Length: 298
Image (cartoon, rainbow, N blue to C red; front, side, top):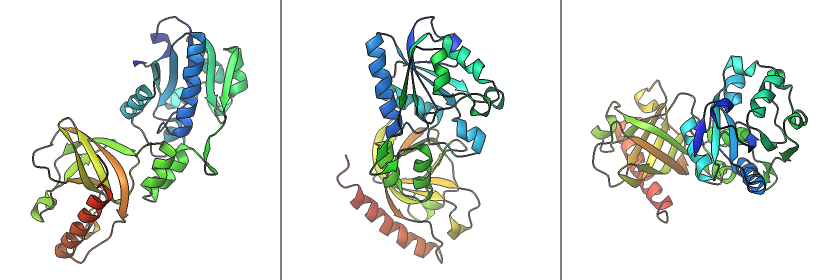
C-alpha cells in the first residue's frame, strides 16, 4: 500500500476517497472500506483513505488512541486499501476552514467520496457530507453500523478496554485488540520470583486494558502464548503504568525487539497482595487459567 502525508504528494490521477480517523479500524470502518473498494472498482481507479495522525479526538478531546499510525496503516493494507494519505492532525490543521479541506480533496480528483454519517470537517466541524458534493459528483454516506443493538464506534471500544472487557472490544473490532511495542529493560522483579516478563513500551496515549490477560505475542522470531499484566503493580508500590508479558515455554532475549501482543481473555483485575509469596501463588493460578483459555488457539 502506498502512503503519503498530503494529497499533493500523490500522482495527479482520479481516485475514490474515504475520509475519517479510522481509529481502531473496527467493523464499522471495515464496512466503509468495503464501500470504498466497490466504488473504486466501479470507476476503475485507486481506493484512497484520507486519514489523520493522531485521530481527531485525541487532539480535540484528549482521548487515548486505539491504533498507532503504523498499526492503522497495517490494518488498512490488510483490508485492501490501495493508498493512504496520513495527514498530521495539528492544532493548525484543525483550525483550517472547511474550504481549505475541500481544496485538499480536489487535488485527489475524486470520482466518489465515502464517509460515515457522523463525519464533519474544518474549523468548528463546520463541514458536512453535503459540502463534499462541491468536490465529487457522488458522495456515499455510510450509516453507523450496529451489532446486537449497539453502535460500533471507537468510543465504545475504548470504554470496553477501560473496563478490561477485551471480549467486548473484540466483538466491535472483528479481531482481538492488540498493542505493539518495543521490549525494554524493567526492574527484573519477575525473574527473582520465577516469572520473568518482557516489559513492553508502547507509545504514550495508546489505549491499554488494565488487569491480567491471556495473550498471544508475535515477534520476528516466533509466536507464543502467555499472560500479560497491565497496571501499576500495587504490591511493590509501583508508580507508573507497566505492560509486562510472561511468555510460556520461552527462553531467550527479546530486548530491543518489537512485539505485538493480542489480548484474548480477561483473567482478573489488578490487586494488591500481602507480599511476594502471595503474589507468586496468584501468578501460578493466572498462568494455568491463561493456558486453559488459550488451549484451542493456534
